Length: 192
Image 1 (cartoon, rainbow, N blue to C red):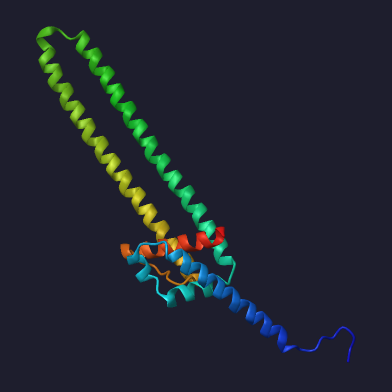
Image 2: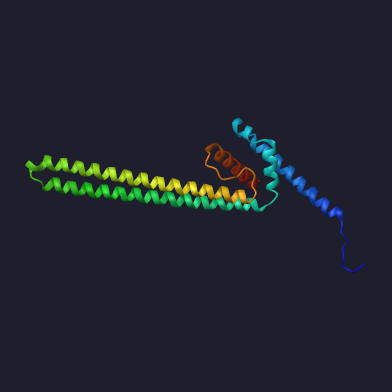
C-alpha cells in the first residue's frame, strides 16, 4: 500500500448520510413545532410531506443565505418605493400650498365686484388640481404595485430554481400566502 493512501471506507459515507438524515429530522421537528403556532387553516396546508420536503431542501445551507438576501432586497425595494410615494405626496402638498397662496393674493387684490367671479374660478382651479393630483397618485400606486408584483415573481423564480419546495411562479393570493408562510418558517429556523 502507498503511503498516504486511505482505502475507501463505506462507514464514512454511512455516517455522513446518517448525519444528514439526523439533521433533516431535526429540521422537520423544528418546522412541525413552528407550524403548531400557526392558524389551523394554514396548518392544514402545510402537510407532513411538504414539511419533510422543505426540511430536505434546507439541508443545503445556501437556501438560508438566499432567503436572507431576498429579504434584504425586498426591504430596500419597499423603502425605495415608499420614499418615491412620499416624495410625490410632498410635491403635491407644495403645489396645493402654492395655489392657496396664489388664490389668497388674488382675493386680496381683487375688487369687490369681481370677488364672486374670482372665487368661482379659484374653486374650479382647485378641483382641477385635486383631480390631477389624485390621478397622479393613483398612477404612482399602480406603478408601485406592478413593481412589487414583479419583485414577488422574481423571488418565486429564484426560490423555485434554488429547489425550495412550495415555490413556483403564481399570482394566486392563497399560494402566495402559503409561500410567505414557508419563507417565514425558513427565517425562523435560521434564527434558531
